[in-house]
Length: 121
Image 1 (cartoon, rainbow, N blue to C red):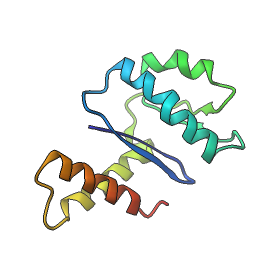
Image 2 (tube, one colour):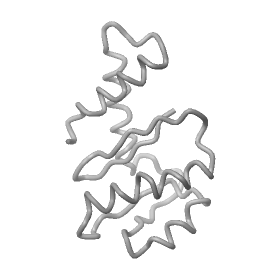
Image 3 (cartoon, rainbow, N blue to C red):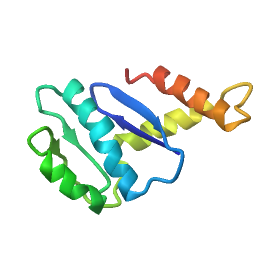
Image 4 (tube, one colour):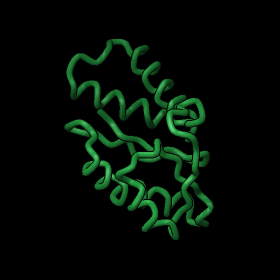
């Protein structure tokens, strides 16, 4: 499983998750990866974070509302989230690899390579 972040300006890191994404793991990713991404890519503080309305993140996002804004959007609206299109492009690129990845480490290597090649950058 992976976690990723993107913006209309750039894509951020692709983070490998060794386990399923729990609420506590999500709360550790936000300060470690989201916060730094938003402060670099949107240093003007005009960036807005769009998330899937995970309840556990609400308090953290409120505490950091001075660092970046949160884009409010209806729950269960993936068609409004550009990350879905980016993930589809990533999976399509991985599916088209020849030879395909055979091990979890091969898959991780291919995912990172294809992530860096996405045309958004």
